[in-house]
Length: 365
Ligand SMILES: *Cc1c(COP(=O)(O)O)cnc(C)c1O
Image (tube, rainbow, N blue to C red):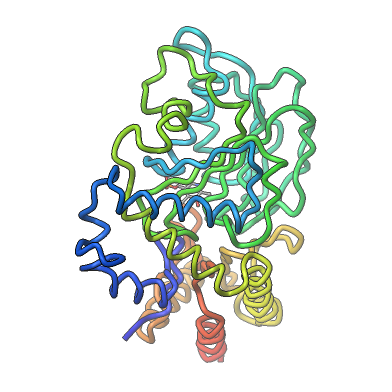
């Protein structure tokens, strides 16, 4: 039996995508091989990576002056590559200035890593209220190398409802948990990056979308694998790319295109999220701790209203366990914040959200 998997990542994939991958497992495109067995430099593989890039460009409306890279190391390695490429000095040590906005645990990790290479200025933070809102975003200094935000905060369930105005300073964003969930105006950003395992495909691939003028600024001492220009020059094939993951992303993108592209998927996501938030807002047991204006479409944390901590923990532990027993899995909140969280990425069908709400109503009564 297939379960409804609310995992924050790696997460649910569309059933038709898994079925197609299974059908092509032993013989992809009549080549007599699995995609896993192909040389990344072969004529059989090239159309696969080319198709994935072309579909991503089409669906996201990526302008021609941006490069698309398929890398490894997760979003976490981008926490290092961004400052190393855009702000590091000619010798190891602190280079140029950069602005960061702290909206959660992932932003905080990016900040800590950035501070190894850049003179990091955290201009705003929502830590004072447990990251349940997005703070006002101050303007950067004119000479900042870049301005870093986390567009959707996977753990705390917030999202930026409008972008900061950074003038000529490149805006950089981690979009791991919201890529392709709703329209993103790529032209407003210098670099966008996302680990694939939330909304794009299996773990192991990182998508980087980078404006051309930001390529080629890494210092000579930077490791060759961590320079964007290495991967741009070699079209993501300086070394062996995550071939199978790129293929799977291609299948997911085909699926999104078949549904009607970003506008169709956005509509579905809005519908799913509205259903769930409406239920939470009306519930007498559960609630969303996130300010309405900043609520994520993808990751929805919720807690019970019990006023004593022991009771709350007991209710929440029992909830997660009983939900799993009826096939609604991975509903525990992040280990650092507790409570529950339903991640309802693109691939979560609306029936999964309805099944969760039905279960919550029963649990409540
Ligand atoms: C999951 C996640 C990460 C970490 O991604 P890895 O690919 O495991 O490095 C970083 N940022 C956000 C917003 C995430 O959701």
